[in-house]
Image 1 (cartoon, one colour):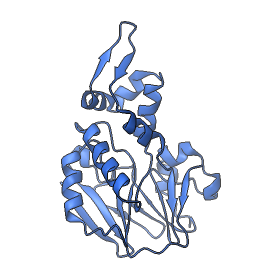
Image 2 (cartoon, one colour):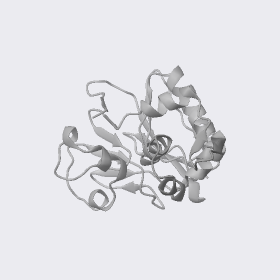
Image 3 (cartoon, one colour):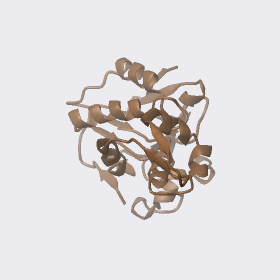
Length: 224
């Protein structure tokens, strides 16, 4: 399981950014707003960079620029990145399209072949990025993951499917996961702040906010 272990490393602050879903202008605005110092801080993007919104390619370009420039910027895999990779490998396109995948295809450019399959013009650097995404990040005080964790299961035994897709079993759990879990995936009107979790997918692609939380201050930045 690809969980990045940063235990024992010290950061002045940790910034976590919720689901972007192709909303590149909001991402640029948010990055201008936060006070991230790459030499002192850690920034984690929680996945779902693509689909539904119109600028998936542009979002990946922005993230690639950050990751290539700053080792202190980490990107997690969301279920939408996994669906895109599955689609490119020949999975049922209807499932992907139903989840907003056509917008990603339009962003990259594509053509439909005579046999009904699709050729999507994704740069190799983007594919390499998507295939290299972490499933989670663990620090001394937090666990960062796209969707959440299954209660009662240690971090090293969590399934990839749960980390990318779980909802209610995690959202409604009051269990102590050992560390506070910071996640996206499930849209909320306002950040969900509980003793055991912080949820920051605030529905940017649905006309609401793109949210970043600064830890341990629990200071929230948001743009819309």
